[in-house]
Image 1 (cartoon, rainbow, N blue to C red):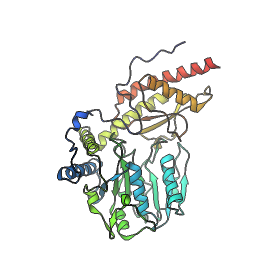
Image 2: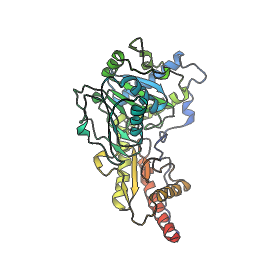
Image 3: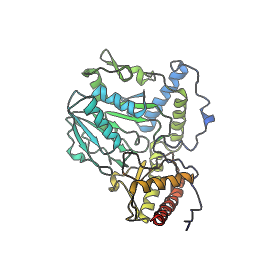
Image 4: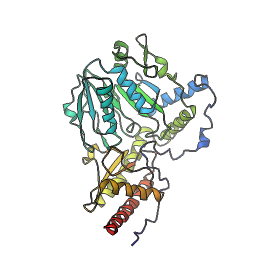
Length: 384
């Protein structure tokens, strides 16, 4: 017997965790001011890049003495740049509770070949933050994009730390409060919380990080694409809009549009409120349906952007197959695109709930998840 479908649908079915949904006001025509066919080193290009840097500073409340740069290769490029430039001066602690954090562990241990102290936790869990030794440099993700687990705050990071904190904040920036006094290097990408286009990353350096860059030379060679210093001094132009390689001015214009929209909804607090409202819609649904649960079982560690769910019904025979079938049903109906769990994560669903997503769309999606679950349970029973 066919399961009745919900009466309403999300107006925007885009719930991908990267690239993420564009801002609700997005229109290609609004990018007509992009200086296409012009050099990014011309005055107009430099002006746009500088506006992207200072708009980021304004909305994220980044201190005036922190350096902000636009760098190649998305968040990955920014994180690799940070690790290859800064690590090796003292001991290193690597914290990982999802796939991207695990990737940074691989790079530091196998590529840089540092004798790092590695702390890991299973998906849905977090490491014991109280055991971190801040006499070392500490590398971690603020928000686990593939696990839905985030650090709750910066209270676990001491103000008098000797080492640097290097934070991958790509799915946290513009949705969660980042304590800048606790972060020495912070990275993110445009295609996450504000729904920008791919290939551009941002790196934010505290004065302590700049001091390390200017006083320490790594033992390994640095390719041009990674170099932040010249002659022992920071290449300040990178942090004024003189990018290392050629940026897409169309992508820059798109980011500027997203920043303008962020201002219109109340800046960081408005974006955070929107993400929290989206998470609340999922929480209400999970509370009412015992066959589904958050991957992160502790509420204080749950992300308000990359919300990861798991199916818990005892009737499910093949967890991975079942979750993929549910996601396929939702996509086939045009109500949710790209919400299957990340390939390395436990089977389930991953719903992007950042501020560019409307709470009405998240609320409209929830009955469809129930429909897809019940339809797949029925199909499984018939096959048996």
